[in-house]
Image (cartoon, rainbow, N blue to C red; front, side):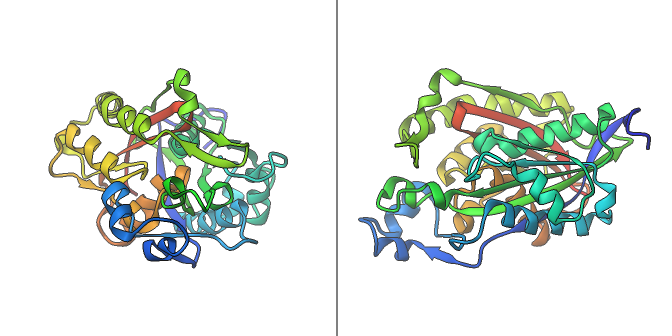
Length: 317
């Protein structure tokens, strides 16, 4: 394909994932803060989460997940000419993560940039990748969501330390004769950006009840619009994979979609909230378990700080 001409559509060729080895259970956290396994499960649905080692970086995790996606895609490093990393937890703003990831994966001189749309980041980046392939700006794109939220958590604050975790998920996007990645529906509610922010410029803080009300009352129309723009009825969905923010939020939005046959991603139970990594991480793990066969129709929905959101329909490779 001549990249200046573009393609009729774009598709995901493969997914990849990475989780740190260190498992932190609710009982582990109960030894540090005033909480319990029952309290955490009843409020956010998490049983355990993965936390990176001190010397393990966002780039390290992005390389691990991106390398797996690239290997599974059947492409070589030379076939990739754009790398996008969605992250909001990179410790250093300069250099960006994407260029370092590309170099470590042996991808020669690609376009490379980071996207910060917080927990909606991967869905934003996937939309950009699809547009780049269809518009002719890229042939094949490596898209990665990678987060090390443990660097930004106050481990003495039980309202946040029980929620956030680390990990990465990736996808390779390439040309298609069909529209296998539907139009992205995105937006923001910036007047409420103060509901999730860095306290003292170093600790993640969120107004839990305000965020809960926003997600459970205002986001399902975004998901329905993404279905409509892709020409897919709720009854045709194989799965719904929203950002893994909170199990109660995931299930509340899913109920409003009226798609009882769809598998609902509940990766948060064992992975925690990994921000922009959560959607691709959940997708990759579901594929690995055999829950999403090739050709499955999936609705994704990312949402988080900003307050930003994005949704799109895609087909599983």
